[in-house]
Length: 274
Image 1 (cartoon, rainbow, N blue to C red):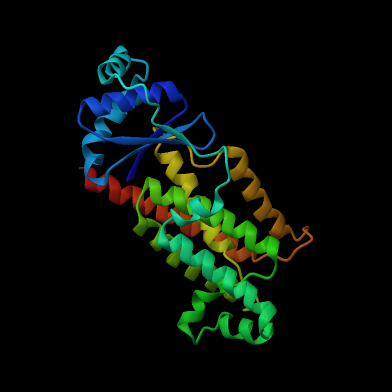
Image 2 (tube, rainbow, N blue to C red; image 1 turned 30 degrees about the vertical axis):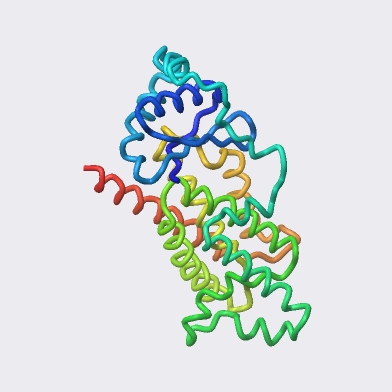
């Protein structure tokens, strides 16, 4: 299934879904909060459904959507509310395998610090310019439970949004490029004693920020206050006024790499639609 778009009026979206059904397009509706509804269609139906969706966005309260609901005549509500229960495990197993793999590896490495010699494990995974594999591995290393949970929460949420709105390969490219760039930046500007997924998370932030700014027909992935908070947090890290040590250069170059990937993705997408 592929995300067709989202809209903040559940009843109007149901009318659009009924209209799509009259055109032979099956879709599913999902909502996290009961307000914003996301519409999903099969991959093979996306190209056919997209013009109808754009038509709906331009005039969501057209009479034809109400007429379509009468024509379909279904009393079942296809909207699935996912925000009433946590269901963390069921949500996790529905995620893309890359999202799952990064989270699982990060957790296993964190747990291993308490079972085996933490220094030996860190030395094996820390950045080493002579070992290409270690250009990536610091992204999986976390030094505290808050550090781990904060990064994984953002990784899973933003990563899932990127996959749903673009493609798996977009997330894969973003992960690899941002991990390489942010890790190299932190190593060159400071040293090799760092770890964490935050460079990748800031890359996701940069991608989602630019993607939403360039695709105004879709609901923004992140609100402006959240983006502002993350940017201020990064600035405070550079100002060295926080109570924790942060990989500031990894954050900055991760953010910049995410912005660049979003611009490249948009450019390639526009070329494909010509």
